[in-house]
Length: 122
Image 1 (spheres, rainbow, N blue to C red):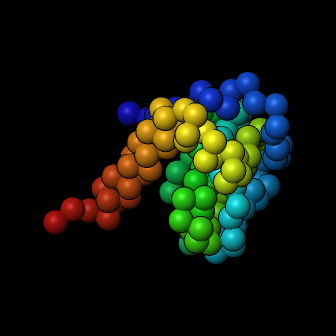
Image 2 (tube, rainbow, N blue to C red):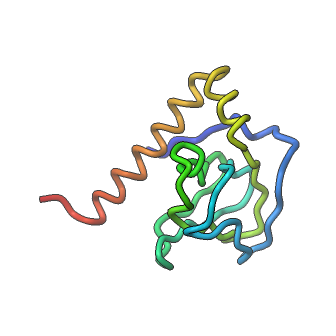
Protein backbone atom coordinates (compact mmCIF):
# COMPACT_ATOMS: atom_id res chain seq x y z
CA UNK A 1 0.00 0.00 0.00
CA UNK A 2 1.44 3.38 -0.99
CA UNK A 3 0.13 6.52 0.66
CA UNK A 4 -0.42 9.47 -1.67
CA UNK A 5 -0.92 13.10 -0.68
CA UNK A 6 -3.21 15.05 -3.03
CA UNK A 7 -2.72 18.28 -1.07
CA UNK A 8 0.00 19.52 -3.46
CA UNK A 9 -1.77 18.72 -6.72
CA UNK A 10 -2.96 22.31 -7.31
CA UNK A 11 -0.01 24.12 -5.72
CA UNK A 12 1.29 27.08 -7.69
CA UNK A 13 4.65 27.54 -5.94
CA UNK A 14 6.78 24.87 -7.61
CA UNK A 15 10.34 24.02 -8.56
CA UNK A 16 11.24 22.24 -11.79
CA UNK A 17 14.14 19.85 -12.20
CA UNK A 18 15.50 18.18 -15.32
CA UNK A 19 16.18 14.43 -15.35
CA UNK A 20 19.47 13.76 -13.56
CA UNK A 21 19.47 17.04 -11.66
CA UNK A 22 20.21 16.94 -7.92
CA UNK A 23 17.47 18.34 -5.68
CA UNK A 24 19.40 17.94 -2.44
CA UNK A 25 22.42 16.04 -1.16
CA UNK A 26 22.92 13.63 1.73
CA UNK A 27 24.70 15.23 4.70
CA UNK A 28 23.70 18.79 3.81
CA UNK A 29 21.33 20.89 5.94
CA UNK A 30 17.68 20.75 4.93
CA UNK A 31 15.08 23.45 5.48
CA UNK A 32 12.22 22.06 3.39
CA UNK A 33 10.47 18.93 2.26
CA UNK A 34 8.91 18.38 -1.15
CA UNK A 35 5.74 16.99 -2.64
CA UNK A 36 6.00 15.50 -6.13
CA UNK A 37 3.53 17.09 -8.53
CA UNK A 38 4.77 15.42 -11.73
CA UNK A 39 7.64 13.10 -12.62
CA UNK A 40 9.78 10.85 -10.46
CA UNK A 41 12.46 11.49 -7.86
CA UNK A 42 15.06 8.89 -6.89
CA UNK A 43 16.16 8.74 -3.26
CA UNK A 44 19.65 7.34 -2.63
CA UNK A 45 21.48 6.60 0.61
CA UNK A 46 25.28 6.40 0.46
CA UNK A 47 25.00 6.29 -3.32
CA UNK A 48 22.52 3.38 -3.38
CA UNK A 49 19.00 3.98 -4.72
CA UNK A 50 16.45 3.04 -2.06
CA UNK A 51 13.19 4.47 -3.38
CA UNK A 52 11.50 6.22 -6.28
CA UNK A 53 8.91 8.84 -5.35
CA UNK A 54 6.20 9.67 -7.88
CA UNK A 55 3.25 12.07 -8.06
CA UNK A 56 1.50 12.45 -4.71
CA UNK A 57 4.60 11.30 -2.83
CA UNK A 58 6.78 13.32 -0.50
CA UNK A 59 10.47 13.35 0.33
CA UNK A 60 12.83 15.34 2.53
CA UNK A 61 10.38 15.43 5.45
CA UNK A 62 12.85 14.08 8.03
CA UNK A 63 14.97 17.25 7.91
CA UNK A 64 11.90 19.31 8.86
CA UNK A 65 10.92 16.98 11.66
CA UNK A 66 14.27 16.48 13.40
CA UNK A 67 16.46 19.36 12.09
CA UNK A 68 19.33 16.98 11.28
CA UNK A 69 21.29 16.99 7.99
CA UNK A 70 19.78 15.18 5.03
CA UNK A 71 19.91 11.40 5.39
CA UNK A 72 19.70 10.84 1.62
CA UNK A 73 20.28 12.42 -1.77
CA UNK A 74 17.31 13.26 -4.00
CA UNK A 75 17.78 13.22 -7.79
CA UNK A 76 15.25 13.93 -10.49
CA UNK A 77 14.83 10.53 -12.16
CA UNK A 78 12.72 12.15 -14.88
CA UNK A 79 11.89 15.77 -15.57
CA UNK A 80 9.81 16.67 -12.57
CA UNK A 81 7.86 19.40 -10.83
CA UNK A 82 7.99 19.45 -7.04
CA UNK A 83 6.30 21.60 -4.41
CA UNK A 84 8.65 22.93 -1.71
CA UNK A 85 7.28 23.03 1.84
CA UNK A 86 9.27 25.01 4.41
CA UNK A 87 8.99 24.53 8.19
CA UNK A 88 6.39 27.28 8.61
CA UNK A 89 4.12 25.84 5.91
CA UNK A 90 4.64 22.32 7.24
CA UNK A 91 3.53 23.41 10.74
CA UNK A 92 0.50 25.17 9.22
CA UNK A 93 -0.47 22.06 7.24
CA UNK A 94 -0.14 19.85 10.32
CA UNK A 95 -2.33 22.24 12.36
CA UNK A 96 -4.96 22.96 9.72
CA UNK A 97 -5.11 19.55 8.07
CA UNK A 98 -4.63 16.80 10.67
CA UNK A 99 -5.00 14.18 7.93
CA UNK A 100 -1.80 15.57 6.37
CA UNK A 101 0.14 14.71 9.54
CA UNK A 102 -1.28 11.17 9.50
CA UNK A 103 -0.36 10.75 5.83
CA UNK A 104 3.23 11.88 6.52
CA UNK A 105 3.46 9.43 9.42
CA UNK A 106 2.10 6.61 7.24
CA UNK A 107 4.65 7.36 4.53
CA UNK A 108 7.47 7.36 7.08
CA UNK A 109 6.19 4.09 8.58
CA UNK A 110 6.03 2.47 5.10
CA UNK A 111 9.63 3.52 4.42
CA UNK A 112 10.81 2.17 7.77
CA UNK A 113 9.07 -1.16 7.18
CA UNK A 114 10.60 -1.45 3.70
CA UNK A 115 14.07 -0.73 5.12
CA UNK A 116 13.49 -3.28 7.90
CA UNK A 117 12.52 -5.86 5.25
CA UNK A 118 15.70 -5.11 3.28
CA UNK A 119 17.88 -5.65 6.32
CA UNK A 120 16.01 -8.83 7.19
CA UNK A 121 14.29 -9.81 10.37
CA UNK A 122 15.61 -12.12 13.11
